[in-house]
Image (cartoon, rainbow, N blue to C red; front, side, top):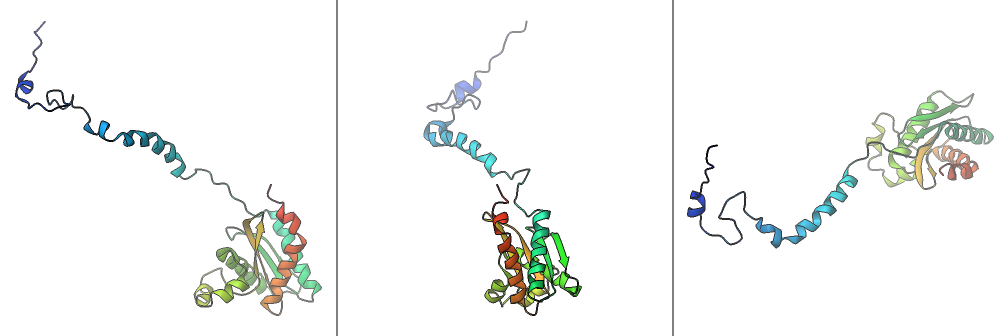
Amino acid sequence: MAPRIIDYHWRMNAPYIPGRSFGHPRLDKNENEEENPMKRALIPLMLAIAPSLQAADIVEEKSIGMELARDIASEAVLACRRAGYHVSAVVVDRHALVRAALRDDLAARFTLEIAERKANMAVMAWSDTGRFRKMRPDIRADLDEIDGLIVMEGGVKIVASGYNVGAVGVSGAPGGDKDAACARKALEKLAERIEFAIE
């Protein structure tokens, strides 16, 4: 077996540095270990926090179901009918996707589109459209240019146990205030069911 050759050259020529093994880079002590104990203490904490900063792969959310949406739309149309108005009512979920749409027999077909756009506006602002219209007249014209939106009174958000779950839009009555009144009557009639829809 060939004799093992040990290179003592670097040991003989390397300057003596306290805390180091003859200056050999692989044997050098980490100077910061003793100087920064806080760094070692923070590492477990950072590892524990890291998973919470990562977005969830599955997102759970609260949004209105089809049956409840259907009943809200129906009650809104009937409320206006009792008042002598022929309207359309559209209920959308929290993503402004239509869940239910009803047009009364004598309501103009365009009322369906207007009702949907009102509901969409309520979802985008998460505010009743009449209130939003008064608060932001400066951007009304710009929002009306966006496809699917219209800043008119008659869109009312739907809240269940503190969650914004959707909105209802009504169109066809002689005035947005009357449209909104029909929407609110529907929500009032189904208030207990809406409130306890989320367990």
